[in-house]
Image (cartoon, rainbow, N blue to C red):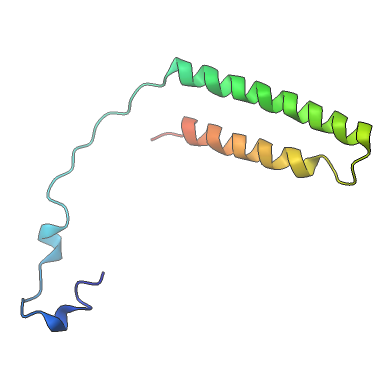
Length: 90
């Protein structure tokens, strides 16, 4: 990006960027899914479910002045984002 910006200081001619940008690329087949990682994801979803129930109970039991979704919604959506990122096709 800045190669041509500072071009006035050097005495070199313009570079052919199409020739020098990518010399070679190797495309490898995707790695198979790990059963261990899938078990960890399932365990994390179990912990998220327990946390959801605990937060709902605590907010209703202790009369906290906010809705439990302020705590539960970000946890759920970040867990969903991580799960989708793992399972999406390459």
